[in-house]
Amino acid sequence: MEHALIYCRVSTEEQAEDGHHSLATQLKLCKRAIEESNKFKLIDDGVFEDPGRSATNMNRPGLQDMLLKIQDDKTIRAVFIQDTDRLARNALDHMQIKAIMKKHDVELFSVSQPGITDSPEGNFMDLVIAGVNQLQSQITSRKTLKSLEQKFWEGWWPTGVAVGYLNAGEPDDEKKRIIIVDEERAPLIQEAFKMYVTGDYSVFEVRDALYKKGFRTHADKRLAHSKMIEILKNPFYYGEMRWRGLVNTGKHKPLIDKDLWERVQLVMAEHNRYACRRQKFNFILRGLTFCANCGQRYTAEHHPKKNKSYYHCNRSGDQIKCQDKYVEVWDIEQQVANLFKYIEFTPNFTDRLVTKIEKIYSGRKEVINKDKKALNTQKMMFEKKRDTAEEKLFAGLITDDDFSRVKVKIKEQLELLQDELYAQDKKLNMRIDELQDMLLFVRNAYEAYTKSPDEMKRLFLGLYWERFEVANKKIQTVIPSPIIRGLMQAEDMVFTKKYKEITGPRIITDLAVEFTPFIAGKSKSKIAPKTQKSRQIAEIPAMISNQPNSVILDTVWGEVRESNP
Image (cartoon, rainbow, N blue to C red; front, side, top):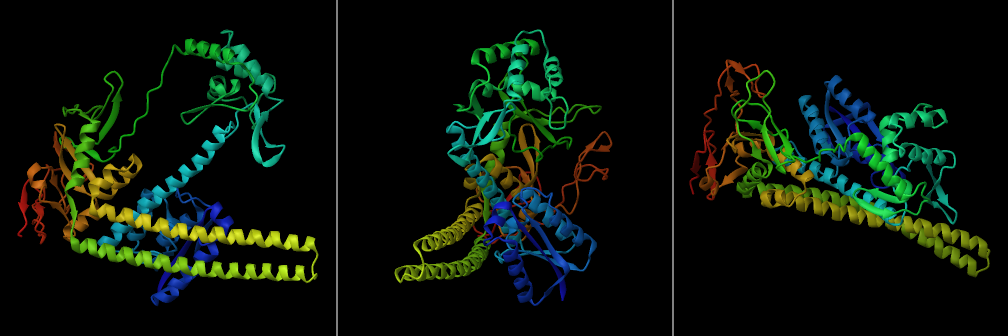
C-alpha cells in the first residue's frame, strides 16, 4: 500500500472549544479516511500537528516538518486533512503548498470535501475554495474589528494602551478592561510635551532627557526616535481617540489639554517644514501586467498633481527607456474586467461541477449531522440528570444548596451544547454560501468579479490569468492561468461568440513553444530569459468546440473563428 501523512491544525479558539475541529477529531476522521481508502497506509511518525496556530501564514512548525517529509521521503503519495482551511486560509499559500506536493507526486485528500480531485474541475474547485477560505478569514477579522469598534464607541481604547497608561479591570466587573493612568510614567509624558512646545528641543533631545530621568523601554534602552514622535503626535493624551478613521472622546483621564497638544503639532510641523506623506493606493494588476514591446513588468504609481494613477513600463537604469505610453489605472483595469464578460464554461463542465458540489455538500452535511446527533445525545443525558436532580429535591434526598449547584453546572453544560449545535448549523449554512459563490464563478464570472472587493478581485485574477501584455494603452496578449488553460484545452471553457465583435487581445492557450522579445540582440523576457530569439507565437491547432454560441481563438492577433453549430 502507498504511504500517507496526516496534517491537523487548530486555532487557539477552536482548541479551547474542543469541537468539530479539535485535533483529536481531525486525527480520527483522517485515520478513518485512510483505512477506508484501501489504498493508503499511515506511516510511523506520519502525523503532523499545529496546535493553536493560525492558517493565515506558512510559519507553522507542523506544516514545515510535513513539507520537509514530503521532499525527503519519496515513498509519500498522499496527505490527508479534514478541510482545506486546515491547510491554509490564504489562497496564495494554498497554491504554493499544492505546488510542492504536485512536484513530489503527492496528492491532497480533504475528508469533508471529497469532490476535490486532481482533475480540471477538481483543481478549479480547489482554488475557489482556497479563495473562499481566505475571504472567510477576512470576514472573521472583520468580526473581530466590529467588537473592537464597539469598545471604541464605549469610550475605551480597543488595542494596545498608549505609553503613560495601564490596562486594568473595572472595579465592578473584573472581566471588563479599562485604562488607568500609569503614575510612574505619566508625569514624564507630560514633561515631554512641555519641553517640546518651547521649540528649544528636538525630538532626540526630549527623548534623551526622559531617558536620564528613568524613562526607558522594557529592554532598559532609550525610546526609538519614531516612538517619541508617535507619543508627541498622539491626541489620546488630551482625551481624543482616533482609530481606523474613527474619532471619539475617551473615558480615560487626559494627561494634557488640547491647546498644549495643538501647539506641539505646530512646532513639529515647523521643524519638519510641513513635510507630507504620499497616500497609498491599491493597484490590483501589480505583478500581472507586462510591456508587450520590451517584456518588462509594469509598475503603478499615483500622480498627486494630476490626481491620476497610471500603469507603465518599468524599463529604466542603464537600459534604453521604453517609449510605451502610460495607461490610466481605471482604463486598463476595466479592460481586464471586460475579459470576464466573454468567459463561458460549457454545460458539460458546469454539470460536472454541480455534481461535485452536491457531493461536497452531502459529505459535509453527513459529517455535521453525525456531530449534531452526538451533541443531542449528550444534551439528552444532561437533561435527564437535571430531571433526576429535581426528583431528588422533591423527595428530600438532596438539600436546596446541593440542587442549586447541580442545576448551575447542568445549565452551563446545556448552554455549551446548544452553542455547539448552533455552530454546526452555522457551518452548514456557511458551506452553502461557499458553494453558491463557486457556482457564480462559473455561471457569471463578470458579475462575480465586478461585485467583489479588491481583495477578492486579486483572487479572481490569480485564478483566471497569468499575464497581460500591454502596448499603446491596450492589452495585446493574454495568457490564462494554468488551470484555465487546462479547462480551455479540455474544451470545458470557451470565449463567447460576442468576443468576435470586439476583436479583443489574442489569447495564448498553449505555451509549448516559449517566446521572448528581441531587443538589441539581448533577450529581456521574464518567461524564458535564456532563449536568445525574437518572439515566436506557437502556431497551435485551434481548439474545437461543439458549443453553438461559442467562438474559438487561434494564437494569432485577434483572429476569431466561429464554431460549427
